[in-house]
Amino acid sequence: MAGYLIANISVSDPKGFEQYRNEVAPLIARFKGRYLVRGGELRTLEGNPNFKRLVVLEFPSLTEAQRFYDSPEYAPIRELRLASASTDVVLVDGYGG
Image 1 (tube, rainbow, N blue to C red):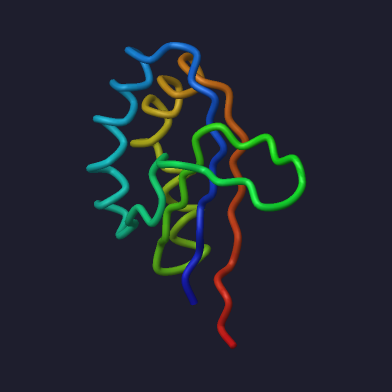
Image 2 (cartoon, rainbow, N blue to C red; image 1 turned 180 degrees about the vertical axis):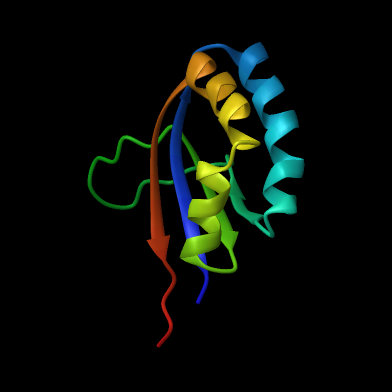
């Protein structure tokens, strides 16, 4: 069953975040992940969500998503993100029904 990494990102340093984006994309692919949502227009239909830039990554499993996030290869790239944006990140299992 697929696993998903979902991030809500508020960019404070566009140049630094651009460097993060350029470096993280190939690593996501190496961990068999793919972008389902990468920014784009948000249309609020109900409630008052605090979404800024929404990113949804799909991995073959929740274990693979966690392996990507915890990997030593991602650690220095994650620091680029943390220095250039504030983020909320969650991992969630896909639906198998």
